[in-house]
Length: 374
Image 1 (tube, rainbow, N blue to C red):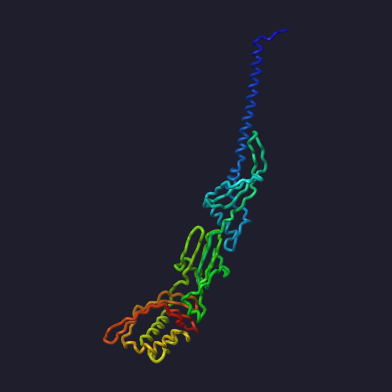
Image 2: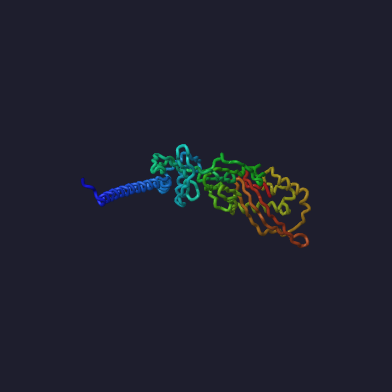
């Protein structure tokens, strides 16, 4: 029998070693490829990639569930969706992890436009495969995509005369939103003769967004941007608007002439410049309602004090102005009348009597009469 030489045995061992190394390298290569694929799959299965795809999908806003949101007549679902789309177009969309459910493994993420929350997404695991003993490869699906229920923290308070109209987001406020009615103190005597407006306060609470407020006067003119409206406060939690209405406006020329004549006539009575004033108050009776307390005061003055009024001459008027004209409604208005009346008393000395009062007129039987003077 032929015996192997040492060279032949070494050669065989060498071949076996090479084969072994080759197999080992092959197995190692397979393992590395497997490990690489496992790491790729593991990385790709991370839920943030699902969220990345979600917020970059143009239609994700329209996919958000709004059935859980509460809307009202001032903020409809359509308004919300339109405002949300505009808000997202002006701010970067981001997401942040919120919580993990230990019952089903679902993950909840908050979706934000800038720093403002606009929705939540819930990811649930569908299939999980463990590779390389410790690496879970999970398929995530979007189980829920809900619009965020913004807590209503915007209030609107508007105080106007009751014959004015208030609109919130183009919706006219009904009387159900009136929380307070306050009579105008200056119209206390006017209301004895005609219907006058009262101040009413509208209160709307828990709006999701700052509201667009419009105020229309009794003639239907929008005065929201006029000087009659004043902002009481402006903050992130409140949109409050108060008004010192009714507003001043320009008095018609014809009415100015009538008012000035009435006030001058009334002034002439007290300075004894009115014919017949010493014997009766009839010369000024037409200026007031029949039961006006100003007629009673005039009668007392005529009987007790008029005879002591110093005789004078050259009565003249200057600086006549009518300002602060406020029409409360079609049958009531007020205005400030100012003028100086100069008179020459005995001895040639000139005296000046100044009138500067607010007069309140009401319309009775088609005639404007003075209801109050302040």
